[in-house]
Length: 238
Length: 61
Image 1 (cartoon, helix red, strand yellow):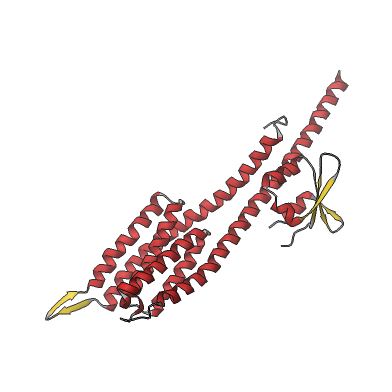
Image 2 (cartoon, one colour; image 1 turned 180 degrees about the vertical axis):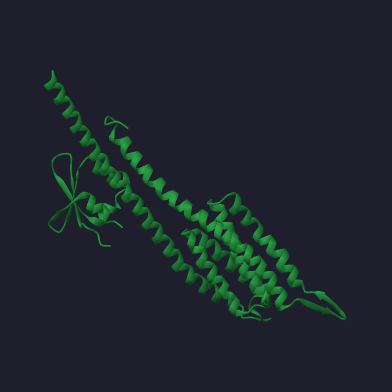
């Protein structure tokens, strides 16, 4: 770049570089978190099978002892839930679709665990842990996706299969609202944290851009002085 | 970390100058701020003391 470049071009180049730095940091975080979730989902799938084997490994039909359907559910449904996000984390890390699929899958694993433990209230804490992990993405939209999946799960299972989610046959009709409200409460702070941290990173990148502009000014001034010195030396030599 | 400046003075093309709070300056689009720096139109102040431009901008984080 020469000193004759227009200020417009230099300004645009500096702004573009700052934004690229910001996007680069975000991309790194997204890719790293995708890889982390790929491992976590694989571990959760195995944990689901272990839960099913430990909690209700066998059922009895008359005198027949058979493997409980929960074991098949944990293995089969669990594999269906985790396979796509693991594939995307491997093939398309850092992309928006990957983290939204991961968010949905993570919340579905919470739902599966809750079912496997017969709606134990303690297992519902898995939801809050999952939301906390998802906040590592620093993307508020991912938290919204996760909350939507969880609220929808509570709503529909609360109607059609309440024992699976609340551990009782006849729960209060609006119990999903109570659970949803706690999830929203947690989500509100995580979204706020994600936005504030992203903003701080953008400010950091912008600061870099402004410092780069100062360096550009200093470089231009120095080159003018150097040119003057050269011209003076030339004139003196002539 | 606190900002090293609380006021920014922008020299206008017609010889006048405009004063703005640090918050107002930081709310400007980055291309406007960069352009001001490239045109050497900015001076940073903490109270009545002038602050070095580089020192001022480094304090943003």
